[in-house]
Image (cartoon, rainbow, N blue to C red; front, top):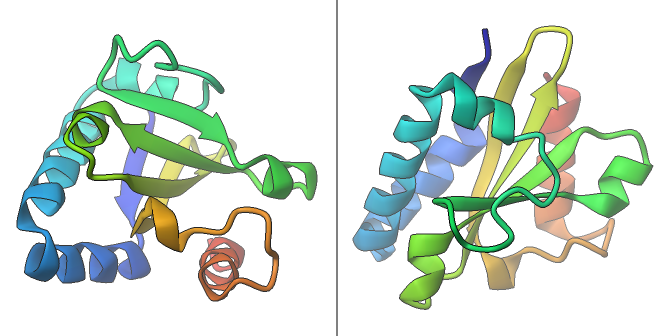
Length: 132
C-alpha cells in the first residue's frame, strides 16, 4: 500500500501559499488529498510522462538531473492550475522499499531551477531528501 507524506518544508510552502495565493493553495491541497486517498493515483506518481496529454488531473516527470545522480525525485504539474496560469510544481521523493511518497516542496515554477545544483531551493530539497 502506497502512502503520501508532506514534509515540514512543503507544509511551510503551503502555509505561505495560503497567505499569498489562496486559490492555488486550495487547489494543490485538494489535489494532494485526492491523490493520497487513491492508490491508483499514488501508483501513477512514478510513471514518468503520466498525464502529458492533459487528460488527467496532473502530469508527472522525473527530475532528470537528480535522477541521474541516484536521487528518486519527481515533479508534479497540476493541470487545473496551468489552465488558469498558476504555474506551481510539487516536488516529491519516492522511497520504493517503503512505498512512501514524500512531498518536499510546493513552489511557483519560476522559483525552481532544476539545472543548477547550487540553487538554494534545490539545496533545500536535497537536504530534505537526505533526511528521509
